[in-house]
Amino acid sequence: MSSAANLRPANDSQVPNDLAAWWLPFTANRAFKARPRLIAGAKGMYYYTPDGRAVLDGAAGLWCCNAGHNRDEVVAAIQAQAAELDFAPAFQFGHPKAFALASRVAALAPGDLDHVFFTNSGSEAVDTALKIALAYWNISGQGGRTRLIGRERGYHGVGFGGISVGGIVNNRKFFGNALAGVDHLPHTYNRAEQAYSRGEPEWGGHLADALEPIIALHDASTIAAVIVEPMSGSTGVLPPPKGYLQRLRQICDRHGILLIFDEVITGFGRLGFPFAAERYGVVPDMITFAKGVNSGAVPMGGVIVRKGIHDAFMKGPEWGIELFHGYTYSAHPLACAAGLAAQDLYRDERLFERARELEGAWADAIFTLKGAPNVIDIRTIGLVAAIELASKPGAVGARAYEAMERGFNEFGLMMRIAGDTIALSPPLVISQDEIGELVEKMGKVLRAIG
Image (cartoon, rainbow, N blue to C red; front, side, top):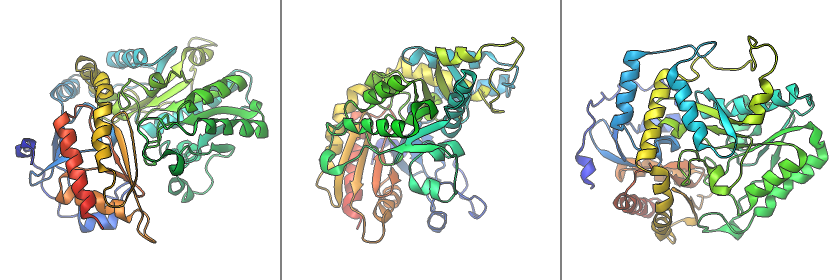
């Protein structure tokens, strides 16, 4: 076991004696409460259970703890901010750190993505971007542009806008009709053509052309925006085929349609760049972000908007509200303080560049699992990997669930699962030795499950 396992959280939490009250999100609640997976502390690359057992974090929490856990600099920033200013209203008032963080985030974005609207989560960021798109066309005299286009297997959070443009079936089907006037592009995954791809698959760039018949069906004058994840994460890690995102940009430009990149997962170094938009040389009209902005320390999200869109709203009397939208906790002081500290860590430790430099070694290590029991595909890009498992007959998802449960309880490894796909996305501070530890533990899990 790693020497990190000898560490203990500073304050071990008591094991709760009643699990009934909390209805856990996106969780098999009955199975969890029969055998709970409790976390009491964290530091660096590891979580700790209430009894002090170390669990290697192979998922950066929920794709968010990019700088590692409980970094001293972030903790100190939050503590100092809480003692100085606990809350400031973002409606008609502001506080200095909100402007400082907005400037830092905008400086990381490509092109003229110069303005930041803060939210509290990726879900809120997506719904905000969609509302900005609709409002932009309305104030531009093209109010008929109301149609939104997402993609099959896309995940854009859990707001009504996000589930409407999203394309994960179970996230949609329980809630009836959401937004009207939404279409979906086909997803980009084809195992027969793309199996065991490292980085962007060679096959599939042409799938962007499916946007053209959708535009022809409805007419461009009715379409407000297209929203896609540069890499589809929550559906099981689907890297974009070569040329795909560039073709989407060209088609949207040709028809005057806004293009939104949902970078809630890919933002802040996950693919080796501040934003995936830079990796692919594409400037979207808006970028949504969350998770990594402050390394998951305090809930926060936002939308980065191109100058021309922002400036279109800056008309009318100066005392008039330009956009009737916002959240009580937009740019919360604690979240902003954590964000500034995390941005300093990303810069000073070159974590984005480090992720890019580790990408090859990461892929080499993950691909040693090819041929392990029940593995039918492996996909890697940046510091992300997917290990797809054959499903048990009549029990889709059961094999990956067993891998997650046994990984945590028996092998000291945390992972994400989507159906029968295991997703790995460790903090960007992972070392070569810890990559080896992660892959070794993952191999043991794969050999142990049925």
